[in-house]
Image (spheres, rainbow, N blue to C red):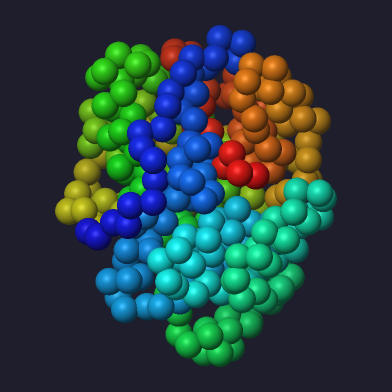
Length: 297
């Protein structure tokens, strides 16, 4: 399948004894905007271009990292970006994101809620010239291929002796593409016994073991691996707090602890995932924390 080269790979791994984990640090994965989004966009933008699309419509919260990354990398490749955004608690980070989105050149529709977005979608789609439609977080079967590929990258680092084979990989579960891609890719890369531990941080969309498994299966099919085994998958709940975008004391404590160890996390996604890791959700064995935050935040 076609792929647009956006990322600086491989991203580094290191042991952080103070956190009781190894860290796969995607924060500097790409120059314009890092984190997990550019891995997905390498495949998404290439697919859009192959289909002859010159604009992309996608969705997120007011402070969407995915929407901003899509706008930045689409603009770099000469494509327009349209964003439909739903409400989330507004803090300094969200306000800064809105400024970045405004400067990105994206065309923005504030739709307030998921039901209102669904209602407005046909009108937005037609008004903006039938763009390439991308789900929240870039978590389409094509987008998840970014983390199928990332599983092979990790396996190469294990083979090179940079870290032991993880018993579990912990990451935030915001839209499902990262977890689905790893679930599909790890067995193909020779890490079939590594568990994918996805910490739920988003209640705006349905995210369950079944939905992630379905997405992983659809990604497998794209690369001719339909029916291949998936890695063990666990969806961890209880760390989201009052809802998507709401801070929690546990995440705040995890962010402070990580900062003391030289790792910058955020309160919406990675802080909650680290809180789950520190609470023992990953179980025994070497644990790898996949840092999906962008250093540019």
